[in-house]
Length: 200
Image 1 (cartoon, rainbow, N blue to C red):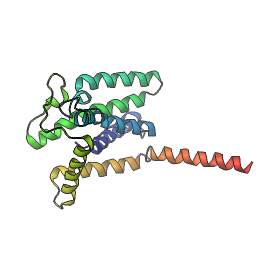
Image 2 (image 1 turned 45 degrees about the vertical axis):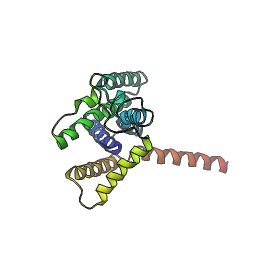
Image 3 (image 1 turned 180 degrees about the horizontal axis):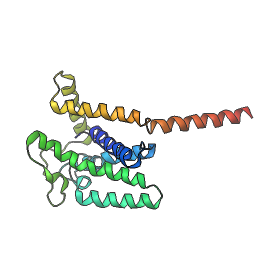
Image 4 (image 1 turned 90 degrees about the vertical axis):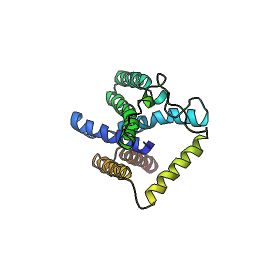
């Protein structure tokens, strides 16, 4: 899955959880955390593998269930101690959903579950390509993605991705555009304070 697809899945799941459990939309900090956490495994593993050669592949420490579960529990406990339990839940939802989201689509496409992607170091994923820089690899993959999208004949998987993106965008707007909402409110307050000082 692409990073933005992980972000979409994470936001959708957390927002739906908030509506079902808390009976309200997620706040800006929670929305920011769930999106960040949903891409964090890739931010850990891909540069370390592709750029620095620390891991054999882009599925290692960050994607490992043996790292992800303790990290989610640690962040959740810390957030609760700081009086921000929802932030801990947002982190856990975003981070932990990344793992099955990297396994299940492969099953849909190839008919097998690549569980080794989430079992590092017990079952590490072997490198299947020569080592190239992070930016070169990422640019090549984005190029392939856009080529398929603009070719005019998207696959069923691509249509599903676009459908999820549309659903997440509509839900985000329904939620009051968290993060953007807080930025606008904060900017408005700063302008009012500044205007109040200049008129005194």
